Image (tube, rainbow, N blue to C red; front, side, top):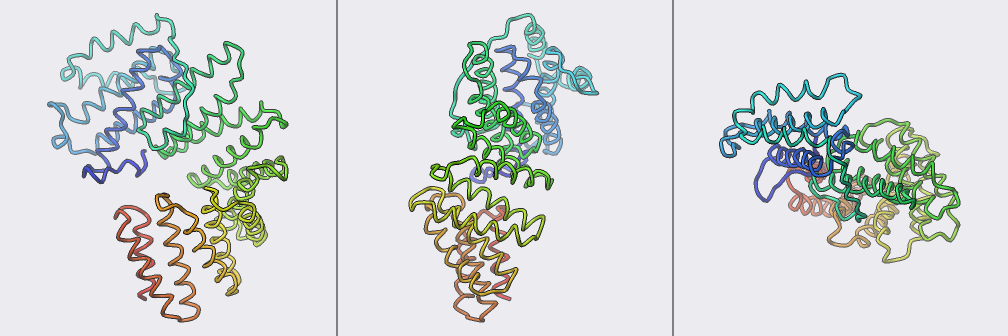
Length: 413
C-alpha cells in the first residue's frame, strides 16, 4: 500500500483518491511499456502484481459516484487496468504463482467489457506482443533526481536501467554501476510505496553487485555502505533484528576497508554509530552499544568540516546519543551536552531542509527535559514556544504535528 506521501493537501483531494490515481497510472504505464518494448521481465515482475492488487483494494474503498469519470467509476477503471496487466503477464508466461494470471484476468474482464469499447482492440494488441522482437530502450539516468516522483516515473527508471544493464552485458562493458543504479531505483520505489518487498529487491540487487565487486575496487566501501543502509531501512520497516545485525556487520566492514584519510570516512563513522544507536534504543538496551555509538558519532562530527551537508544530521545523532545517555544515567552533564548539540544541529541545517522542523522540536524537548530536572520556568517557556511554532507549520496529519502537540501537553502539565 502506498505511503502518506501521496496526500495532496493543496488540491484538497483525499489520500485514498491520490493513491488511486497514482496506482492506476502505474499499472497502465507498465502495460503500455510492455506493448512498446515487449519486455516480459517488466510486466512479470512481482511489483506489478502488487500494484494491481493494491489498486483494486483502494478502488473498492472509494465512493464510486463521487469520483466517476465519464460514466466509469474508479472500480471499473481499476478492473480494466488490472485485467490488462494480468492478461499481459499470462501472455508473457509469468510463472511462480499458484493462481494463474489468466484466472485473475477473466473475472475482471467480464464486468468491464460493456463499459470499455476499446477493450477488444487492446487485448488483440497485447496478444501480438510475444511474436514481436524485444525492443530495449537502455538509458543511463541520475536515479536520485527521481526521489519523490510519481510511481510510474520511478518504474520507468527501473525499466530503462534494466535495459541498460542488458545492453552493457551484451557489449562487454561493466554492468555493476548500472546494477547499483537499479538498486537505488528499487529503493526509491520502496520509499514511494512502503512495500518491504520493494526494498528487498534493492537489497538483493545490492548484495549481488557487492559479491562481484573486488575489495580493492574504489567503489567497494560505498557499496557496502549502501547495502548497510538498505538493511537498516528494512529493519525500520519490518522490525527484524537480524537485518539490523547484518547492517552493523556490513557498516563495520565499510569502515574497516576505508583508509584513515578517505573523504567519506566521517559518513562511515556516522552510519555505523547510528546503527549501534538504533540497536541500543530498539533492541539491546546494551550500554556497550550506546557507548560505541557515542564514540563513533563524536568522531564523525569532529572529522566533518563546517559547511558539509552531512554535519547537521551527524550533530542531530550526537544530540540523540547524549540524550539517551542522560536518560540512562541521570548525569546532568549529558543533558547539557544534548542541548548544545541540538542547537548546533539546527544551526548546521539549512532552512529549506526537510528535517529542520524536527531538529527544532528536539531543542524544545531537551529544554523540557532540563525543566523537569531543575524546575527553571524559562526552559518550560522555550519548550512551549517551540512546540507552538512547529505545531502551526506542520500539516495536521503529519507525525511532527502530533509530536509538537504531545510536547506542548507535556510542558503544560
